[in-house]
Length: 201
Image 1: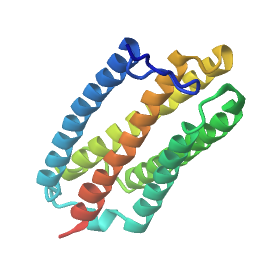
Image 2: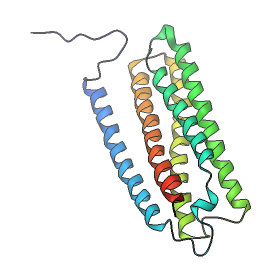
Image 3: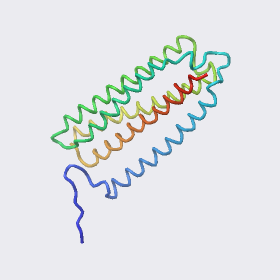
């Protein structure tokens, strides 16, 4: 009977606990994807519902949104790099790359808040029109997801510093990495539907 080989650097992702956790997490991501798709569809339908107010072309600055995309891309890239060397002797590198992801995520959220404040200062709130209601909902929902991911990152790094890189912590960091990169994928669709398609007349 052939024995399974367990690599010392990684837990057995096909064991009952890990495989069920990863599978359950992918099921959650699929439900999240359906929710975002529904909001994207609503935005496309409502993007011309300005109620006589400004349109997306009047409010959005594509270069600014592109910079946001690049910042989030860097954050997603550093999360992936952090998970390439998950061993105790390399925990400092993991903390560095995860820390960089956190900082870039913070920069992204700061840019989002600045954009919201700019619109609010001009009197363009979520109550101004159906278009702005859809805009604030889509962008706000994505930002909320990223904020939760950043909070979980702090928690998991604290667990790693306390317990080491045990399989439970590594499994959680793996799910977090998947979630973080999933959020970047969602942002690609957000940039496309909200900023590019939304700005077309």
